[in-house]
Image 1 (cartoon, helix red, strand yellow):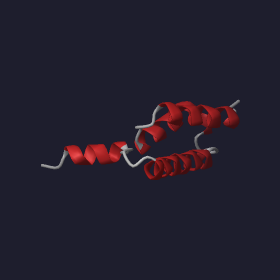
Image 2 (cartoon, helix red, strand yellow):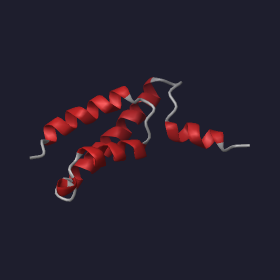
Image 3 (cartoon, rainbow, N blue to C red):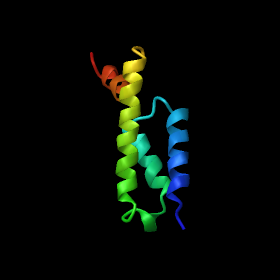
Image 4 (cartoon, rainbow, N blue to C red):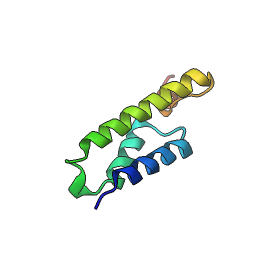
Length: 80
């Protein structure tokens, strides 16, 4: 049986330990840690987790002016 509270705690820990992770990385974490048989019934949990992930990144950007999300780092690499 899937324990959503255990998942939430694991996701929070993953976000803390991966401060430069992208939204795609967070989505991959969700898909890897929610059993395939539970994805449809727990899709709300994935959406909630991704929204929380975005909020954490926005908050970091405000609190730390030198913090730069992975998406921004990648975009800068492609500028000539």
